[in-house]
Image (tube, rainbow, N blue to C red; front, side, top):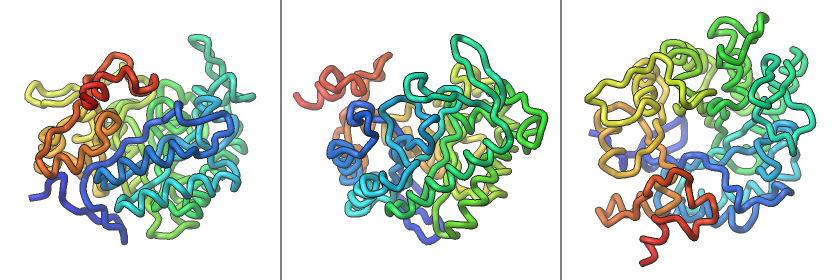
Length: 354
């Protein structure tokens, strides 16, 4: 029976266990240059040394106009390859596979950092204004994602993850709430998936069969049934891994009704339901903090991987300690995460230091 310490293979890559470091932007380590810092490298190095099987970097922007903040790592120029390669190197030296999450924020781009905020369709709501992309601009953005993937490969990453969740550009294309287009990139689930599917196909064609392609997506951009249809489109396009989180509206679970006896939230449930319908490995994530929680999902074939976020911020040795059955410093689930506010007030870090 597989458990969280079982190996798994993706193409030629052997991933030593089923624990994934979820992508989390570390604003406190970034300056406005967007260059990888010493603190960045140490941040990923600690989690690799701590035993994580697969590390997914924080969101790395593919275009200056698509930043979620002024301070964000970037892959829109070869100038950033050297810095990003340092992250890949320390992960590999410590036995972890690592993929770079590539990203465009679309209508959620920072007003301070982006001169021209774009989206699949015109958007004017809650103080957010974005204009509709022309078809030629869609193709240009697809090329930006492909070029970023090439840079990730040059930097030594094992693959990339397209950020298609959390209301960013790809998620906006997937969402019938946002995407009102009536051309090939809107309407049906197949058309709404087309923007990302064409990127996946091109990356596969240009970077080869052994380069890992993952996509992070929500189970609630449209209905869960639609999300499964979209994921199957991505399977057909050549994706290796589906990382299931939430879509454009985190508060809107649509038709996702979680059974009373399911011990996790609707985000995890959506991922487990998608797993049943897919051939490629699936990652589930959200509020999973203990080895027991993670193990149950893998042992019962509800997921292939379990991604940890804040649990790994509080205790970078989570995986090693879980395997040795040693005490793990716990995340207290603060309403506003104190780790991201500098860490000194994080109750998990404080308790750990005593």
